[in-house]
Length: 149
Image (cartoon, rainbow, N blue to C red; front, side, top):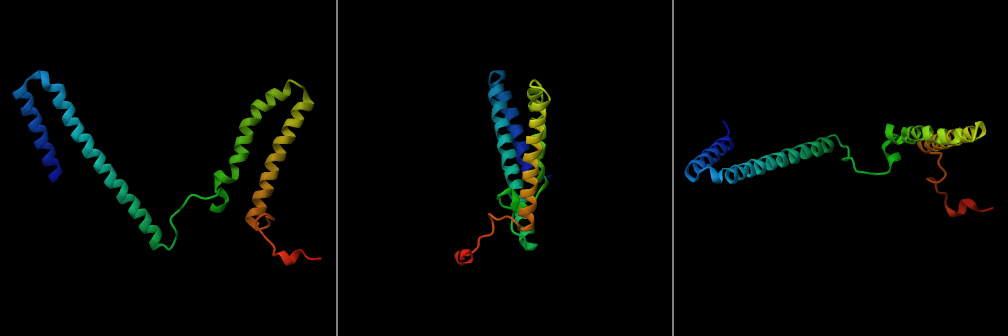
């Protein structure tokens, strides 16, 4: 048995004895006090576990020579699934109500809506492809003298 368990048993015994000595009118206050001590003990234990897990996580990354993951732009992660397909999924979800609204104006409205949806997704895919291959013009900067005639 752990020393903390012994301490908790002593607290419970003291609470039960105080209830016997003071009577039923103080029972709820005694129970609340005991529960408060349990909550504090649980909070401290959870905090220790979280700190230990975080330290182990950071240590494992440091040993592997990899930096600890930090928040950054979505393209910096090498094209994770959510960053790559998030817009496509979102546009397909929006396609349902947009199609219903466009269907009220007939086939031309529905066709224009879907051409727009496909166009947005195509533009995003081309941009992601160019970005992954280093073909993105916005990321490459040429020196000033490269623009001379």
